[in-house]
Image (tube, rainbow, N blue to C red; front, top):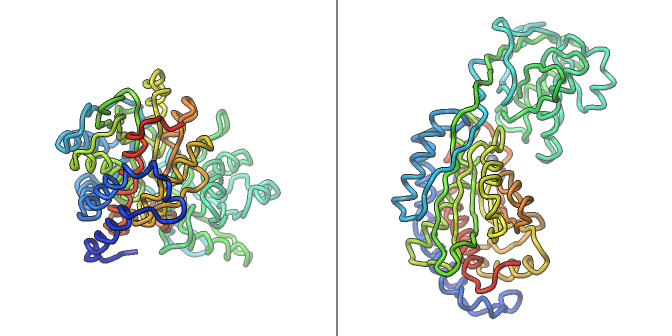
Length: 460
Ligand SMILES: [Zn+2]
């Protein structure tokens, strides 16, 4: 996944030529696009001429590290981002307060204790309670589905359940992490383990949130590497009774103060109408939160910096929001929806980038048929960087609450990369990201945001 940064400057000219080229025979024939070809070329050219976005993301990770809600690192990064936005020349830069959950991992470990001792690669799940100081030791019962859990109910009481469910896609597999611990607890399990929600990698556990069922007993829970899940499965299949000891200091403290960071380029004619671009600035407490979602923050922020740099001030306001607390609460998203309740009807579009920054292929879009047709035509401006595909669903955990409340058109950056291999692991660091992909993503988002904010008629 590491790619040479030496290639950075080479594609600039072809991209410029293609973006500014006379209309090709298909969708690019839309003549309403003509006034936007030149500014789009300039935005793409500027973005591709510099590794600025990647360098800024590297600086975030190197300086602040990971940024879990409630951590000093997140709050320091938030204050830094607001100061940097001002230095970029953005307007109305401010932070909006949000109370966020404050979960702390503490020390943790998982060991096979019988028939022979061996450490396992684990990460406790966010929101989990801890174990007693001496840990919880019990026999492991491995299941491959909730049905298997239910039919093994009489063997689960007093034991530690392991869900060994191979990754298919996030939506499908994540339910074992989110709901699995409470379902095991309902059968009397004393702790739960989950095969990491991601494809097999290099024996890395993936953390993430669990959700305890209201009023049900709570048990500690952790993710283990796919390799270790397979090992425990093979041991059970051979009839070996395997015992493990789980130790977790995890605890939840009082809610902490945090902030969404907001910066704008005020619209020159209709400043009250807003195009929002966004990523979430909090991360899990492993790696440096570079793909999830520091990269999404930087490339959306770049859209405004590029416009400012090139003196492109669209008719409507373009606003960047760096959300807090996506990972274990989405409180930043909810606070924005509530505090901007009366302005949601003036939100023309909300965009989120939270699938990692790999090679951008285009955008997901959700909105009216007319708006989709417009966006599909607009995407022709991105053909030069091959980011012109418009797919079915525009979505994001952070834009979701506002999008629903205000019935706002929604977009998300689509990328081609193995996001879930490093998602929520110690390997989520900036070196997995190609500087050129950061530049391409910044360019694509800048062009879309600019045109939607500049079009005489509002996107409907
Ligand atoms: Zn994310």
